[in-house]
Structures are given as C-alpha cells and as structure tokens.
Length: 159
Image (cartoon, rainbow, N blue to C red; front, side):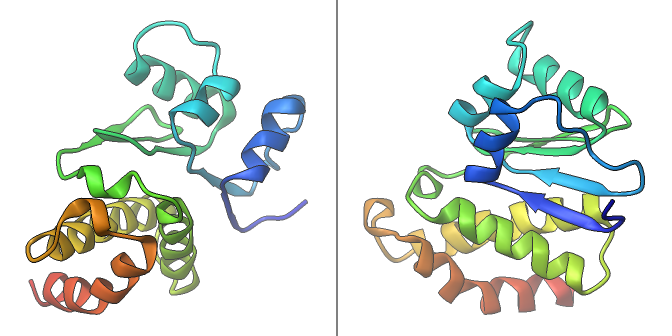
C-alpha cells in the first residue's frame, strides 16, 4: 500500500463512510478534513464532539481536521488542538478545498503532517480574517482566501 501522506476530503470521506472496513495502510499517514455533516457519517456519535474526534483519530490512526467553529485537530496520539481563530467567513463553498490544497502543498514541501494540518488551518483562517478587515464576510468566496495567502504566509514566516 501507499506509504506517504494522503489528504482525504469531500467525496473520499463519503466513500470511507460507506465502506468503513477500508483501513489506512500501516506506513501511510491520512489527514481527513470533514465538516460536521461528513464527520457525523464517519463517527460513532458517542460523547462530546471533542471526544468523538479524539476517539476517531486514535482508532483510525489518522489526523482529523474537523472544520467548524472552533475547528478541531485530533492526532493518532490523542493530542487535540482547538482553533480560536475560526470566522464565519470560512463557512462558504470551496474553503474546504483550499484547506485540503494547503495541507497537500505543505506536505509536498516536506512538512510534518500534523504541522501541515495546523499551518494550513491557521493560514486559511488568517487569510479569511485579513479579507474581512476591509470587506463584509458574507461576500467572501474561496478564491479570496487564496488571494490573501501570500500576505499571510509572508508575515507568519517572518516571525
């Protein structure tokens, strides 16, 4: 099986929910990026959403990035990260595609998978916030996040 990192989003999440017997190859790293509806089909729905994320990430040995407010990142080791920066502007079509693409881009640069997930999440949220400083959040579309990324990433990498 594949031994690298794989970002799993959208229809791939639906396929996994329908075929939950599919397991991650031992040496592969899966980073799954569901929204709450997709995650409801994947999880057992036992306990709080945070407990569900931790349980799922540990059982499936995957990095889980649950999109929402707050966004939650859960790791196979049971670590969790909550993002305090989530903005309503992120709840628009295509932002999940931007997140998945950013994670893949960071992975392609050799970044650790957990760091790639966290940096992509934070970068996207900061880009959305930057957009919203001069415009109404309701007008934001996914490509507006992409347009803000060079400014956000340049500022963050300088710190």
